[in-house]
Length: 181
Image (cartoon, rainbow, N blue to C red; front, side, top):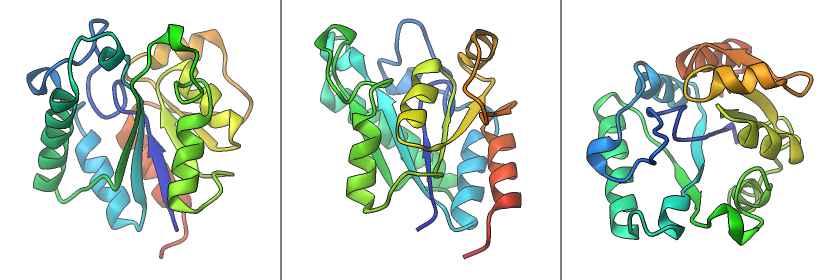
């Protein structure tokens, strides 16, 4: 299976320091939805791994998170794209769980559900916690400079991390370097 894992906020949609708390606040980054559709058309299964500590903080509830994701799915369908799974961590930083990135638990859950090792599976994120979680499972690391990407790049990256302007640029590189299925 050709699999790619994406962070959500800052990669697919614009991020907010106050969290994305409603469907109205979920706004796609220009070209991100089309990039996902192109990955789908290139044979990739696209899965999202996202920290959603706003749930644990009581800033929004599960119905609202589902509504946000419904909006994302609808927007993707309009451009011929799809996300095959969304995995999220609802815990706050203080919970010290194993699923909150930079811990690898969320990615390990994806590996288990997809029945595939994540070694060399592309993981695209915009923050240090994304890169660290991906590195912990041996994923192919991709940083986008949208969201927190510029600050993350300035802080230093593990060797072999590929850097892209945005998700569209990352998708183009993956499709160029990937065998067709």
